[in-house]
Amino acid sequence: MRHAPLFIGLTREVTFAGLPIMYLIVLMMIAMIGFITTGSFTYLIVSSTTGYVALRSLAAYDPKIIGVYLVALQKTRMSPELLLGRGLVYHA
Image 1 (cartoon, rainbow, N blue to C red):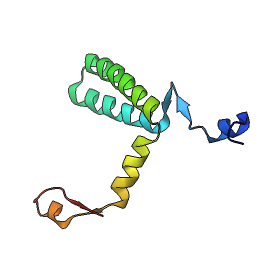
Image 2 (cartoon, helix red, strand yellow):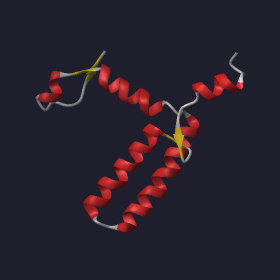
Image 3 (cartoon, helix red, strand yellow):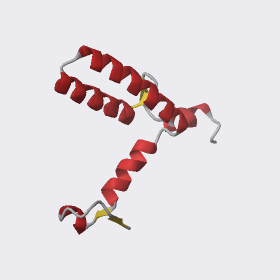
């Protein structure tokens, strides 16, 4: 069943320009926030190109790593010390 073309096509992650959608959103956020901050088209082009290559290679390694990172941040309780300014300590 896992080798059937229909199964592979339906379980594959949606991509745009070779990047999973979550990676594309991260790339657009980094490039646009930097562009708005600096106002430089050079920054926009360089950061977009560099970010695309980096995220494309990361997606080739593991396409779900950003999703795992976001879920881990959402489901892990924050330490009260963080709110008191004593540092970032996570408890399981």
